[in-house]
Amino acid sequence: MSFARGTPPVPDATGLELLAQELIESDAASVLGTLYFRDKGTLLVNPATIRETLQRLRAMGFGELMSVHGVDYYPEEPRLGVHYELLDMDALDRLTVKLRVPLDAPVVPSVTPDWPTANHQEREIYDMFGVIFEGHPDPRRILMPEDYEGHPQRRDFPIGGEPVQFTIDEAEGRSYTR
Image (cartoon, rainbow, N blue to C red):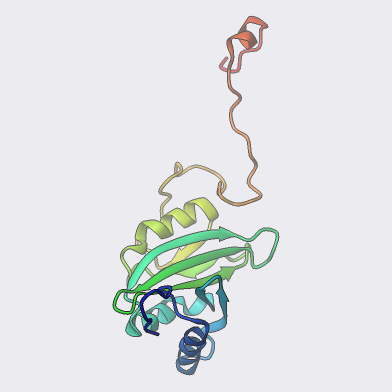
């Protein structure tokens, strides 16, 4: 999957399929599919095998976990997703690894023991989307207060908040602070 100058630093469609086939040969349940869209390669993986899949990808050269993101695919099911962005520094290849979990069982194995950079990113995904990372060393909220109810980045989260108090409201006897 190395590239000549001027080509995008991502696996091409053929390279992506070869990579997926190699992963499937080592564990048939790991890869659910591939996507190649707008010059970007993506592996769709089984959530239960995410740690092993990322370890195999690391052995294949994708040694850098650049970011971990949460996604809400509302109204589709499985609704919640986690995206891992990997980088092969030698070949300048980028790869996205995606998984999806249902809303009634949003549990994914934590990759923090293997990739310490995922620590705070997994906590943020838990806080904002409600995905539980099993085996995470510190599964607390990171952005919202501990007693906060809900996950504000979910698409069905109620939009709103506190009304803004204007002086005209107080003059008319409507005070939102008393």
